[in-house]
Length: 149
Image (cartoon, rainbow, N blue to C red; front, top):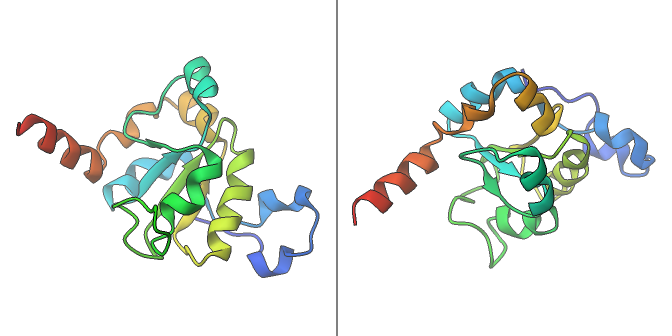
């Protein structure tokens, strides 16, 4: 169940401590269903964090600083998957804290489908859901393109 406790307009002048409650959230138990309906999972952890904690197979690994330009369909450097402002993006950080700030920035740009994964990679790993993203459409399309050659 995606939930938002506050809308982004109500926290524009709020302290950063309130940001974790200000964005849409996706729970780890919803990850597989979200991916099945076309959501794209974006791992915003740095290389060192992914190396230490483990990877999230099927997720796009994009540094948090680059996420706005890569997911915004109006930006000249956007990903091919960034097809519209309603595209569902689920952002994952180490423990779920950093994603709130990034999702809030995306929503201010008009990306209505951006959500933060509650608990981040740590929650996914503890729930044994690390492989939930491997069924993503973009993963299957990439595998088909690679194996066709």
